[in-house]
Length: 366
Ligand SMILES: [Ca+2]
Ligand SMILES: [Ca+2]
Image (cartoon, rainbow, N blue to C red):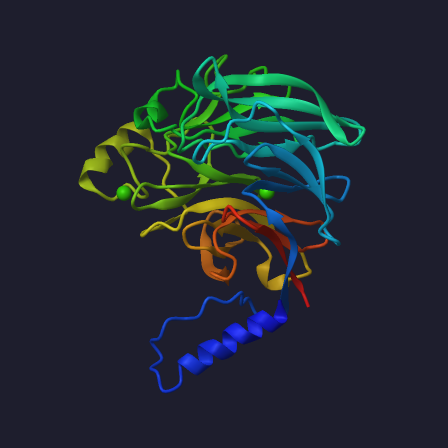
């Protein structure tokens, strides 16, 4: 790894002899001098979720249907199950996963995936029990989420008060994001048995927030719920998700800054993003860094991006309601990046999404 990195740098310097400073920055995995980057695992195929387990293993989904555990030291991948009815089409397949926060006592694994339901492409959330090295007792806790070859949302997150948050995309039906009778284009909140919490905004309805196009990242920090979301040709976003708020899609992209957007924003109390990116970078999985191991990353969202092939550090202000600074920690060297997982000892794991020989790379203090 170090050899090839050195080669890239030397090659870049050689091609740059006599060139002007405006030359393209070479694609290198360059963070800062105090950080080491290593490939942990390879030969993966579209890993979608990586999340830290109470068993000190990285739990991983791959879009084709596999769930595995990855040893964070050796990189050895141990398969747990291949879910038989997963149907991967385009961006769809086996996507998000969340583990019960008290896993030893409640070894429950929640996954969300796309499948063929009597000839219709749909999405469901299924709870499994982990025992004997595999997953058993599948129980559907939410079904009939519209799916498509694009915009399936599907990041899962369980809060400390045991609510399951589910992002859903508009499944290529933009207007559904504004319809509270549809579960598309929403962030949903349900109990771990699939029932609807009594303090949801609408009685008996899983909708927590609406007006989303395709939210791909979700993390709790600073008593806030942060989400990343794909815009159309412009305005990728990072939002703070608030109960019963409208995030604007498809009437509003990014800020309420265009004349046509302003009346909709005023009428619907639209929440504006913390940050937005035009041209789009295809924001994806996100996690929160607050460890002393790498002090300069404390109080930051660490976010993978697909199109931009970069890992971003979004440094938050003290109250967590503003992004003070944005830095690229990896740029280009590993291709498209899908998801992030941070270990309790302050290492950052990143999963690529190139479709062949995908990798998990780890960033750590030297
Ligand atoms: Ca993750
Ligand atoms: Ca706008």
